[in-house]
Image 1 (cartoon, rainbow, N blue to C red):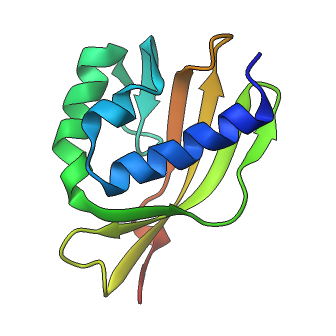
Image 2: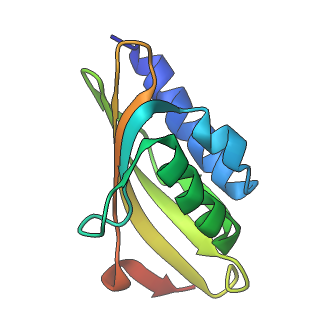
Length: 124
């Protein structure tokens, strides 16, 4: 099972990669057969090819992403509140999200669910 420190670092690495629009770095956290549901309730992306397509289409839409508070870890799960600043509106709008990641024995993410929607956007 991955250590709490590893899980916390992966969530930090994720927001750093999203802020840099670095799709390769984002993909490095995922297991080959991972599932991404972003936002929750939308169609899930399954496997590296589908997940890469999703991030290639969305990574540039975020000017900056950061952790909002501490990463919470329970067994092989990590959850973190995050702030996403949309590109072109980063000075006027923020989207509050809660991302939950499940990790495999090798420390790779096998499931990521992002909880956000219209009700979590707020003006700055």
